[in-house]
Amino acid sequence: MRTRFQQGLDELKQKLLAMSGMAEQAVDRATQAYQERELKLCQLVLEGEQAINMMEREIDELALDLLAMQQPMAVDLRFVTAAMKINADLERVGDQAVNIAERVINTVSLPEAELPIDLPRMAGAVSGMVRRSLQSLIAADAEMAQAVLQMDDVVDRMNREMFHTLVKAMHDRPEVVQQALDALLIARNLERVADHATNIAEDVIFWVRGADVRHHAAT
Image: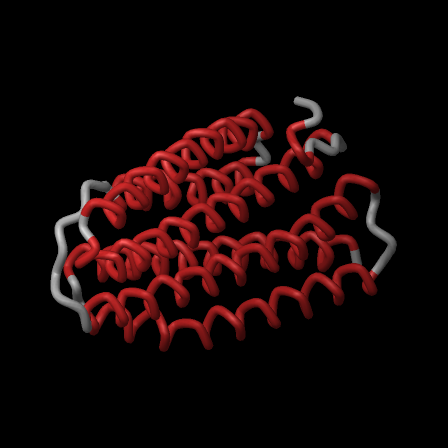
């Protein structure tokens, strides 16, 4: 029974890793679509949402099966419960990618406008957070997870700077108001992805250390 349980834990990790790759790819495709004004990439993101949702259900079912199989010891119980929360955050990352793709579809229908922002840079930082948060899970590395929390502050600062820049652009150039609004919403979606990556990192720290660091209350 214990061997089957360990195999189930390994399978759970692998499914989470696969889902994280799908979610990260969705964000990358959506932001690339914005950069290149490419509707085909948007369509790939929209089509991929169903696969992410299906994987979410599979992970939840596996986690519940593991909890029902036997009464896990403390560290294993923390892992399974953390995995269920991480699963939900990854699904929401996929939702944010869909939101970005839908906003890009709207943007492409408008005249192209040069805006003084660097959304790809922000997207790269956010994707890095998602990747490192899951790497910390696979490696059971609380220090790596802690670094993700610090990266969130950087992304928040990028989002604030982008907000002020775009508001000024809308004031100075009324003809780009809609394009700037779309960019604002995309930046907001990216900031939400960073929040989900932060949640994942916090769950990893809870699993490894048994410490609750939500709201950065502890290290």
